[in-house]
Amino acid sequence: MSNISKVLIIVPCYNEQDSVLKLFLEIKNTVNSSHFFIEPIFINDCSIDKTKTILKENNIPHINLPVNLGIGGAVQTGFKYALRNGFDIAVQMDGDGQHPPSELEKILTPLHYKEADIVIGSRYITKEGFQSSSLRRFGINYFKKLNKLLVGVKINDSTSGYRALNKKTLQIVANYYPDEYPEPETIILYALNKLNIMEVPVFMRERQGGESSIRAYKTAYYMFKVSLGTIFLYIRLKFNGKRDTL
Amino acid sequence: MENVIPYRLQLLAISIAILFMFFIFRLIAKGKLREEYSFIWIICTALLLLFAIWRNGLDVIAKLMGIYYAPSLIFLGAIFAIVIFLVHLSVVNSRQHKQIKDLTQEMALFKEKLESLFKDPKKEK
Image 1 (tube, each protein chain N blue to C red):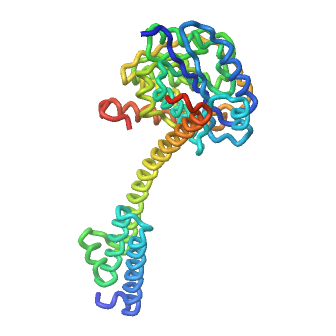
Image 2 (spheres, rainbow over the protein chains, first blue to last red):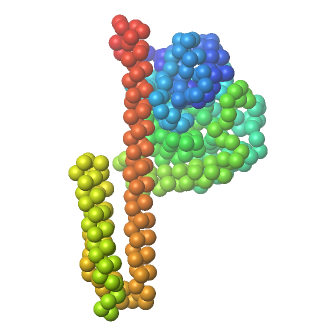
């Protein structure tokens, strides 16, 4: 067995014309580790700006979704792509430049040495870099408690979308992945599938373009939707066994 | 209790029920309504027809159930049926949602593969 992990960087983007090219060049240039062979793939979720043209003109590897699926569906497309093309590790990275590629090695290394099945890049372990609003922190605290209550796993930043997954995890998420706001819900999914979740501190930037998928007036809906999703996913996996995930 | 409904009105009710039934059958025959959904509509029209013909039926059933005001039975039955049917439609909708998502992803992946083969015909993954 070779000691090089094939890594797919999945970048879902919806109207990210200002940041895609920069992000692509950054990914290309940052990781120079002999452990990893890195390939990015941009998932264009039916953007209505110039994202599609920019991806095409600059020869950035990408997939165009013919119908807007939302963040969950877009990322899942990347998971399926990773599985079919024989990647060992898949990383999900936001298209707005929030997740700096320079931190990639931090979340990849534990997977390479098989210390975990999922690595979450968290900005709350050490309080460095962009820390986001108090409202979001309140939400994060709430999910931390909910996750701890349901599955006994303590995750500091369950809303972080900067994650690396190994093959075993990919097989699960290719089969079922929540559509909207998938991050907190998937913690339950991973925990109940007895996967080993690890959190490493990473530095995050403020978004460089685009809009957060969590806007202020949507917070109540977000909390409700995710709580419901989390609890029902818990019930489904706990009592129906792992016979089927959907 | 004999002449609760005038005959003219009864005739109207029966013809409307038959017309409705004919309409449903036509939709099924033309393939515009799938059999699985037509089931509930056939039952509905049958009930409509039944009560149009059996004039005292509503009163009899209401009395059996201990309902004081017979027409409220209509509302009870109708609302119950509507709610059940709406839940059924939501289930169908959710299933289709997943199917569309899967299809979209398959198509996007397939297109990407096709394009990469066009670009580099020698590389066959």
